[in-house]
Length: 168
Image (cartoon, rainbow, N blue to C red):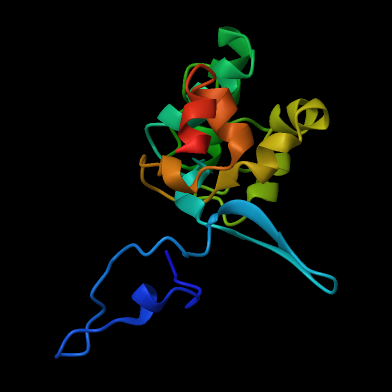
């Protein structure tokens, strides 16, 4: 993380000008923690702590949907429609919408999380599950960083361990 510079240890450098310590204990949090004072409120969110929707494996998005209580049938429908919308080909997935006369897929990765509203089936789902937009990232890889994950996602993915992770 980025040191706030409060600790003397955080500014120590060696003879070549490199920082001596990688972690000093006064780093700025990047997990969506809200910093406040009398005049300003802000959060910094590392996108590696969010659910990547441009990941071709769709592993974390499927996990999010599953652990949020979405039925397997609806998960498959939503994920296939997302895949057909974003992939570069015209080959439909099992319950996707590629080649449908109802809409033209982008055939390109999503550029904003709000673009989910453009995908058939997703708009209706998002009316009752809009919180996924706050949990979304546009990363293409299937990696997440639990150190950068907001508390509400830790509680979804690892409910039995969330308190221990948060207090660590």
